[in-house]
Image (cartoon, rainbow, N blue to C red; front, side, top):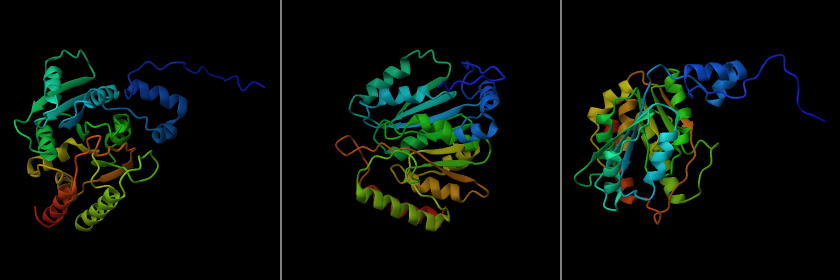
Length: 285
C-alpha cells in the first residue's frame, strides 16, 4: 500500500535560503507552522546579527582543527576569538598559521590572540571577552567535549528576548552524556548546590563551559572578572546573579567528556579554588 498522498498545495523540495535568515524561517514556518518551528529550534536572526565565540586554548593541537571546523559550520554569522594560553605542544604554531590564513569565509571572522605566559582558562576567557564585538557571546572549549552544533538551540531564548544569559546544562537529562568519573560528578553537583545557596539561582550545572550572554551582560561583568583559572565559572555566575532583572535560562546539552589520559585538565586544586570563589563573590563584589 502506498503511503503517498496528494496534497492540495505544492511542497518545496529544497529551501535554499541561508539558515536562520528571515527567508529561511518564513519558508519553514509556512510548511511546519510557528509552534513546530519553536519546538524544533527554528527561528530567524535579526538583520546583521553576529555571535562572538570565545575559544580559550591550551595544548589542544590534536583537537583544535576539528573543533574549529565544527564551529565554522554552525550556520550563524560569527566572530571566532581564539586565545592561546601559552601552549607548548604545537598549538601556538598552528594558531599563528590560522592568524595569517585567508579564510575567504563570509560567515566567520577569525581572530587570534596570544598570552606570553600560561595564566589559566579564566585569563584566556577574560582576554576573549575584552576583544568581542558580537551581539551575543558564548564560551567554547577547544577539546571536543561540547558540540558546537547545539549553539543555535542555546541562542534561541536570547534572540527571542526571553533570556539574557543561557547556561547549557549537562545534567538536565535528555541529551547524550558520556559516563565517566563519579567523584567529579558529585563534586560538580556539590559546587553547583553551594553556588545556588549564595546566588539564589536554581542551576543544575554551574561549572558548564557553555555560557551564552547578551552583549550588555558581557559589558557589565567583563571588566569586573578577576579569576585566572577555573574559578572564573563561579565568579561569572555570582556576578550575573547580582544584575537586577537578569533573566537566566538553562537548556540541556550533550557532553562527550575526556579522561585525564586524553588531556582533561581540571583537578582537585581547582575544586578548592571554586569553593573560595563561591563564597568570595557570593558575599562580596
